Length: 266
Image (cartoon, rainbow, N blue to C red; front, side, top):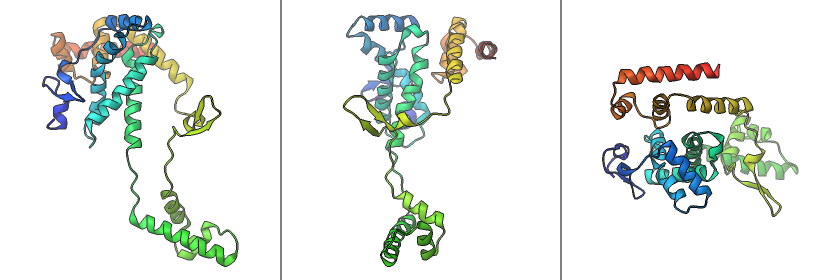
């Protein structure tokens, strides 16, 4: 692998984690449904075919992280974990496309990996202040025979209160939201289970379901263009070449589809 740019050149033979990106297949909607039916009937090969048929989706999502100084083999494998989770938990009876369901899960896995592997660097001056604060607090506590507040430590060191607090906080080990906080021998409760996500309201879920239904009601060509543009991240010119029509026609069809979706969501 020469450069990051080579990784995303679809027409060149580029291997990532042993997979030739040029030979990746894309499943049609009907093929996907049939494979899920076979998977439900315990067909051992259906799951593998679903994974292989959606690797290009993982690849398209990784374009967003192309500029990061990360090992793309690692990111691809992490993205595939998200894809496998999506496939294992997907329910075709809900009428939602696999790609719509899988994208957030793939993104979530990649972002979690980047977060957990991103070491937090603390400056030398902050470390020194934290060390001096602890040392001074211990001295004052022994001198006064009682616990000393941080405000008094800061005053003794000749710095602001918040500087001492920041310095001491910087030395604490970060806690993952996936840290188990309780286990009674049954289901484990994680920290994230106790955190309220104020950004996701029931109205957001309703909007997403309405949007999925609206996309499914589009004409086949419009639906294809929306998927390729906003899920696969392709340009109008790339789609025009695939469909054998002009970019102007793609632009018009895309605008019609977006206007239709806007009307449904009003």
